[in-house]
Image (cartoon, one colour):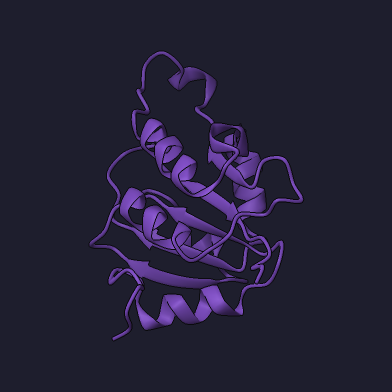
Length: 148
């Protein structure tokens, strides 16, 4: 055990976060995300008993977001047929969490098309598969530089 490290961050996940370099990306995936098929070229870490929000909050305590890109946090946009039909209150939670750890706040976040998100997810270093029940609850983070 270590002091100052959120207990939800397993040794396996901490190792992966440490291995990641500047501009590497990870996905924290909801329970419906095809983590294993998208993660064929990535490290897939199972965290089925946890939700995306609690993992996002813990990761951002130790993981700097990239300051060299305008939007280092990406969310999966709703499909056209889901707009107005499916609510995404979890996005508000993500915005609050990101604002706690990055001075850009919500300006660091963008929504991208579902299929573009899938294309980008195939290139990430790590996918964290959660048990999150909310839909459209996937979030992609781009790592920044640790200064000091």
